[in-house]
Image (tube, rainbow, N blue to C red; front, top):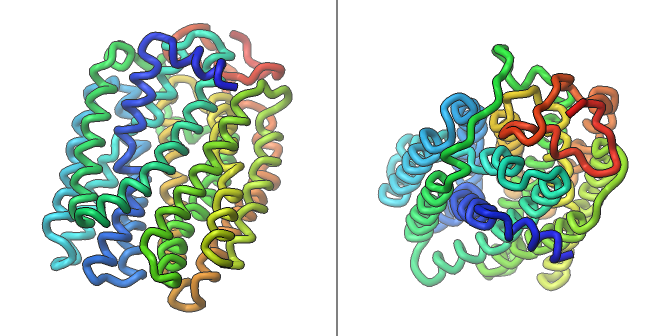
Length: 419
C-alpha cells in the first residue's frame, strides 16, 4: 500500500506541493470549527455560531469558482497568494474585534471565505505535469484525499489545543498565519509558476455546461450538508457531556476513519466505471451517518464517528476522477473549484440547519440532519445516472499537457476519449 504513495512523493516537487497545499488549506479546513468555538467563547448562541460559519461557507462557495477561473486565465501565483493574504486578514479582523459589532463580524468571515485561495483545485491541475503517467495521477488523487483527512484529523486537535492553552482568538490568528505560509510555499514552486491552462472554449457557463458535472455537484452538495451539520452537532454533543475536548476527539475520529478508508481505496487499481462505483460508495457513506443519531456514550460515539468517516475519502477520491471525465477542456481549476463550492454551500446549509435543530430537538436531531444529507446525496446520483454514464467532454486531449484532465482515468476503464 505504502509503496505506491512513496513512488508519488519521490517525484520532483510532489511532496512540497502536497504539503504546501495542505498547510495552505488549513484555515479553510478548520474555519467552521474555529468560528463555532470562537463564537461560543464570546457568549454567542449555537444559532449565531452556525450562521457565521454558514456565511463563511457561502462566501467560499462564491469565491472558489471565480478565483478558479482566474487561475485558469492568469496562472496560479498571481491569484493564490494575494487571495490567501486577504482571506487571512478577514479572520484577523474577526479575532481582534470579536462579536461587539455583528455586521463587522459577518463582514469579516465573508471576506475570509470569499478570498479563500483555490489551492485544492490548483494542486489537481498540477498533478499531470508533475507525475506524467496516468496511473500515478490516479493514485495521487487518492493520496490527495487521504492527505486531506490527515488535515481534518490534526486540524480540529490543533484548534482545540490552541483554544485550551491560549484562546479562541489566538487559534484564529495562528491558523491563518500558517495558511499564508503554505500558499507561499506552493506558488514559489516551479510547477506552480510554470503551469498554464489549456485553451478553453469561450462559454459563459464555463465548466457548468457539463450535465455530468452538474449531477456530481448536486450530489456533493448533500455530502457537504452532512459534514456541515456534524460540525455543529459535535459541539452540542460535547456540551452535553461537559467537556470541550470531546468535540476535538469526535472530529479527529471522523477524519481518522476517512484517512484509513482513503488509504485502502487508493492502494488498489479499480476496474469499471467510476460513476457506478461512486454510487456504491455514497450509499455506504450514508449508511455510516445514520447510527450517529443514537448519541451513545463518548467511547461508543467516537467509534461510530470513525466508522462514519471510512467512506468519505473514497467518495472524494472517486469524485475527482468523475470531475476529470466530465469537465470541459480548459476548465480544470474552475471545475474542481465548483466541487469545493458545492461542498461549501452544502456545509453552510448543514451548519445553518443543525444549529436550530439542536435548540428545537436536541443533539440527536442535529445528527439526523447528517443522515438525511447522506441519503439525499445517494438519491441524486441514482436520479442522474444517465447524465453521469457518458463523459461530457469529447475533445481530444493532448497527452502530457498541463491540462490533460483525461489522463487521470482509472485503469481498467476506457473513458471513450482519444488521447
